[in-house]
Length: 156
Image (tube, rainbow, N blue to C red):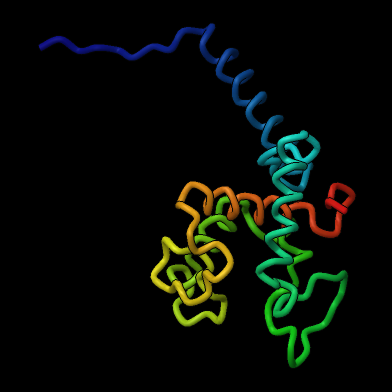
């Protein structure tokens, strides 16, 4: 029976050390940044989407239940989380899932399903004839608006 001796090339160790150091540097830079950048908020496409999102935000009367001002407290009417904190607290992909079907994420939530591809069509009074593609565009636009709400890139 033959026995084999595992040997690592002396060139491998310095190369692996350099790779590890580079990965650690990248990880440290990302953690120092404090947040992950998912998309740019200063492109014409994003600005157009956020502008549509603001219109939808107003059409769906989101501020009827949600706080939207810096430090705005909850009241008898304002019972939902402050949306100005969205960009700091929530991942953009989670926002999309929540807007598509809040009941699937948190059964019993008071947040209604606004879109007709969900089971609860009672709240889809404004855009009941739009197809799923257009509704998804609205969901993305709402998410984009929430990502700039209260910031310098918020549409006026």
